Image 1 (tube, rainbow, N blue to C red):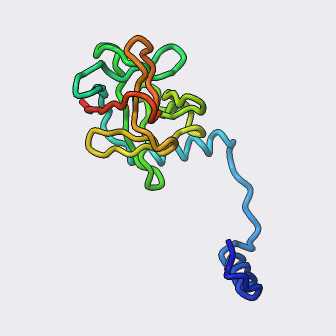
Image 2: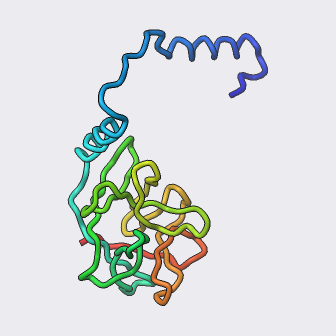
Image 3: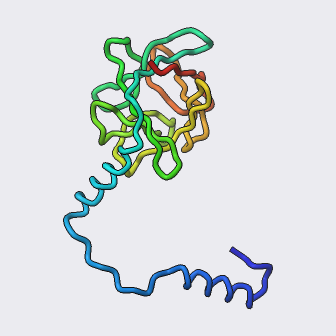
Length: 166
């Protein structure tokens, strides 16, 4: 961050940053790192919503339901195999997780931007505006390439989908 090329202003910015930092010695953590992460997840679950299945629509017609294959990639499936998702807010960002496996979060991959379930470290946020679910990672609506392919994406170059939570 620049402060109009004013060295005194830059120094002032540094001083402000130093005031915000603690100079007290940190206390040693207790338990394992995994325990700490698990506690963070428990805190996040306090703001979780009701688990709901997600019906998918392309051009106004139902194409199926959000499910997953054995590799935890999201696919279009029948209602009998549909997953239930829990929504929750964490840090002001909307996330979704698999209600049957709450350690797995709806996420978007690099490359073709496949949608699948990943651990908290790889979780990506979403925006739900009416029936449009948009990835904060790609800024693209939930989409699919074809019913023959069956995979779900967050890719603006593919057919956009709308969703209904049941």
